[in-house]
Each structure stands twice: as C-alpha cells, then as structure tokens.
Image (cartoon, rainbow, N blue to C red; front, side):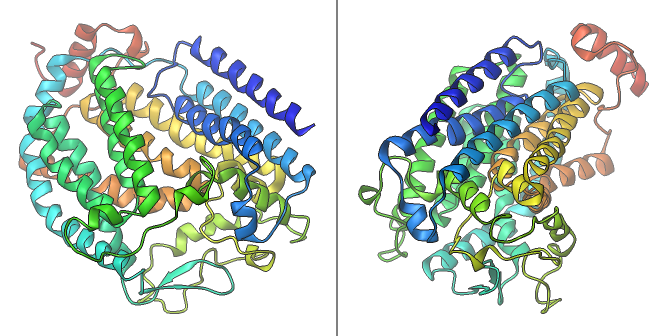
Length: 465
C-alpha cells in the first residue's frame, strides 16, 4: 500500500506541475514554483530514496517508530498542502510579471546608488561583529545556549538573539550590491566575504537566501521566466555549498584561519544518501503524526502563532519569558527526543488541527507569498519593488521548511531592514523612487514598457522621456 502511495504521489506531483506549467503566471519567480520545488524534493523524491535505503537514523535519534498508518497520513497530508498552496497562490496571483523596462532599472540604480552604499557602510560593521561572534559560538559549541528540558527548545541565556541574527543582514546587502553592479564581477566582492564568513558559522539559510535572491532578480531583470545560464551556475554553487556545510558545519572554512575551530557535524559515510537531518522533514512530519493527537490527546489549535508576540522581547528584559509558545497544549518531548526538528508547512498544519490545519496553514502562506507577488509585481511594479519581492519569496526557502509564522517574522528585520533603511535614506536625501500604483485598469502585463513608463511618470508628475 505504501509503495503504491509513493507512486501515486509522483503521478499527482507531475500532474500538478504540468498543469502549472501551462498556466500564464508560471515562472521561477512565482510562489507556486518555490513550493513545488520544496514539495517535490522533500515529499516526493526523498521518500522514494528513504524507502529504498530504509532510513532509520531519525527514528533511532527520536526514539520512535511510525506505524504504516502514520506514514500514509504524512504522504496524504503533504500532497494536500501542495494542492491547496498551488491552487490558492495561482488564484491570488494569476498573472505573469511584466517585461522589464531598462530605462526604469537604470534610473533606479542611479537614484539608489548612494543610499545603498551609505546603508551598507552603516550596517556592515554591526553584521561583521555579529558574524565573528557566531564563529566563536560555533567553536565553543554554543556555550551560551541552554536546552529547555520541558520543550527541547534552545534558550539564549547570556547573549542577545537580535545581535546574533544581525549577521544575516550581510545577505540582502550582498544582493543589493550585486544588483547595483549590474551583476558584474566587482559586485561579487562583498558577496565573497559574506559567503566565507557565513559558511564558517555552519548555518546555511542566509547563503541560500542570497543566492536565490540574486537568481530571481536576474531572471526578472532579463525578462526570462525560467532559466538563465548564470542562474543555473548559482544553483549549482548553492547545492555544493549546502552539501559541504552540512558535512562539517563550516569546520573546513574555520580551519583556514585557525588550527582548531570546533568539530564537524556528522560522518557522511555513516548515513545513506540524503538521510541526514537537514532533509528529514518526512521523518519530522511522521513524528508529529505519531504524537498528535494519538498520544498528546490534543491538537495545538494554532497556539504556536502566539510566539510571534513574545519572540521579539529579549530574554534579558524578560527572564521568565515562555520558551516557545506562551500557551501549550502538549510537549513533543514527552513522547521522544525531537532534537533539531523543522516541522514543515504541512507538519505544523497537522499539529495545529489535522487535515483542516494543513489546509489553513497552506492558505495562510499562499496568501502571504502570492499576495506579495500580486502587490509588488502587479500594483506596485518597478525595479525596487521587484528587488523587494525577491527578498520576500526567497525567505520561503526557510519558511516552508519550518512551517511557522515565527520563522517569517524572525527574518523580516534582517532580510528586509537594509532595503528599508536604504529607501529611507533615499527619501530623506533626494527624489524618492517611483513605485506608486499604476493608474490603469489593465494588468501591468498587458501594458507595453512605453505605456507603463508613461503611466508611472504621469502619476509622479514627471514628463516622460
């Protein structure tokens, strides 16, 4: 039965993907593409590999064994999330993005050059100090982090999480500098420094975010919907970097500047291909089904969302701040050892309210990402709006994996803050960029570049050239 379900999952995935490719809005930049890539790898391809090699690493680590019913529920739930997300995102964002206007892009670069350079000069020292601090944390095995026995969450008792995460600001700054340089080689110098420092911390998401954002901005600027040879190279570099960091958690990079820079993560030879925890969302989802509500006796009822309100407050200011959600219906740690779990979008949905929770969670994130697509590539179209959209959609790489709004809200100040600061500097110091709504009832995709330029100029009170 399970083997048949895996085969059926492949057929459903291919059917949805082919139908999506025929849709006018289909492109690499669309939220549906990002979710299909996420689902296809973690819940279609990898389960087949797991079945072939009989993965058991996470089961042994978490001290549980899912039943066949649990495994079937996971495949059904994952496919339900995919179908709901794709249909909802296409309903919210049904149009392709408009062709690029070269004159507007160059004007945006001219107006934003100094604001971006000033912003980079202001924020880079803070981000560099945070990066160096993160290297020290990795070497000392995160000695300031303590695992809460009741929830299994790590708690920062001595440091400040806001300062630690400030290192992430180098990712959007690297993307903006490459955009300013028109993707030429000198724009990659800052990115090279960022990539080296980020790799040394052993964390991957900021590096993957930056590479994905560069690829998306490049495709939208060239007017291509799917592939550019430079974007393909970026994808290959990202895959290599991810794999290397997974193996030793940045140890090889740290060895370049010191003799002893901490231990690696795992012996790859001890695990089968793709068995390591970075891709184990299938097993994590199985653990959630194993616990909720069979053993917990209750769902979470989306109480995890409440952490959005408590997360921003530093623990030094609120020593008794709840670990995780302020309201808990159960603890996953009462039924196993779910260390390092990333629950995924369908997993969090199931934990919240079963199949109905999966539908609701998929709809929430479809509304967020497809809504950003519709707003930034439709109503507020322009070079800076497109750059902002690239930052929005590339956070989905991490958000889909974690499946929580908390992850999105954690990343907003650091992945979007630099761009917002640059726009503030531009507004205070000179003419503001034109990214106001296009005063025309037609969709932007139906307007020619000349019409769009004329409409935007009329809205701004300028004379079109």
